[in-house]
Structure formats: C-alpha cells, structure tokens
Image (cartoon, rainbow, N blue to C red; front, side, top):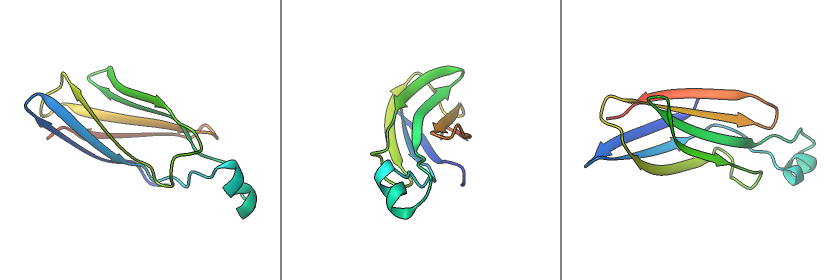
Length: 100
C-alpha cells in the first residue's frame, strides 16, 4: 500500500486539506465474497504543530481508496500537516506535507 497523498492550501487564514489514502477497504461482505481477509481504515487523524486539527473514527462503509476533505484555522503557509491512519489489522500509515 502506498502513502496518503495530501494537498494543503492556506487562503485567508483557512487551510483546506484534501487527502487520498490508498487502501482496499474490504468490508465483511466484500471480504467474504472475495475470500479475503477483512480490513479497513478504523481511525484517521490530522495534526499541525503537534495539535490535532481533525480526527474521525471510520468504518467499513468508506469506499476503496478513501478521499477526505476538511478545513481548519490556526496554521500558516510552511507549517506541516501530518496525516495518520490505522486499519483493522493495526497497520499505521503516517504522511506529511507542507501547507502551501
């Protein structure tokens, strides 16, 4: 699996973040049908300067390679956004990108 692709842009004090996480997101039904093991992202978090700016618990109902978009304030151009997600098997993926 590849890292999460991140785009982060600041405009008038508001940072817009778009993420695309590469993950098969196999639900219980799909896994049974494909005779594979169940696995999907269960937790997604974004941090800037050590502060959590977005956090969500997810389920099997997100699509394959989930796309998330969110906005927050309190950061500036040049700060780094760190995206962390954990899947059902415990695999943790961390990706970082500077705000433009």
